[in-house]
Length: 113
Figure 1 (cartoon, rainbow, N blue to C red):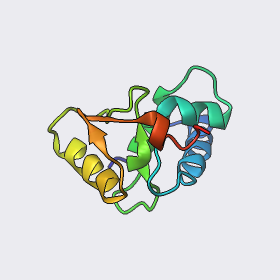
Figure 2 (figure 1 turned 30 degrees about the horizontal axis):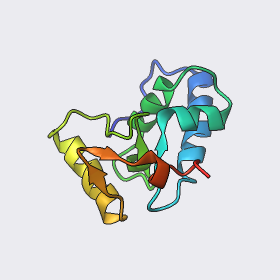
Figure 3 (figure 1 turned 90 degrees about the vertical axis):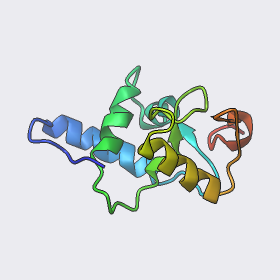
Figure 4 (figure 1 turned 30 degrees about the vertical axis):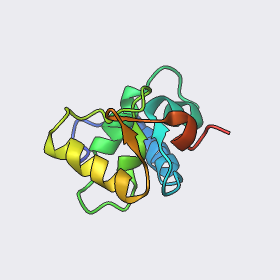
């Protein structure tokens, strides 16, 4: 993972903390999209900041970063990259099933009722 860089502003650090607090709430066996987390945090049209916040995590973080996927139910890392494989393994270990490299958001999205 990556760390907050010296260029990260105080406002961004505060947003990152809000994002990470919400990601921490995603239960095992469920996922949320970047957009889900953005809306949950009350941010408008800034799903990319969720990715930036997750990238800032240290490797030993207990925040379940792997439970955040894109709006299509796909892992955002390049297919067959080590990061993609790691995220997929972590999700499959929690019982999440992939079909054609996609997760059924109707079944696994934490915020779908």
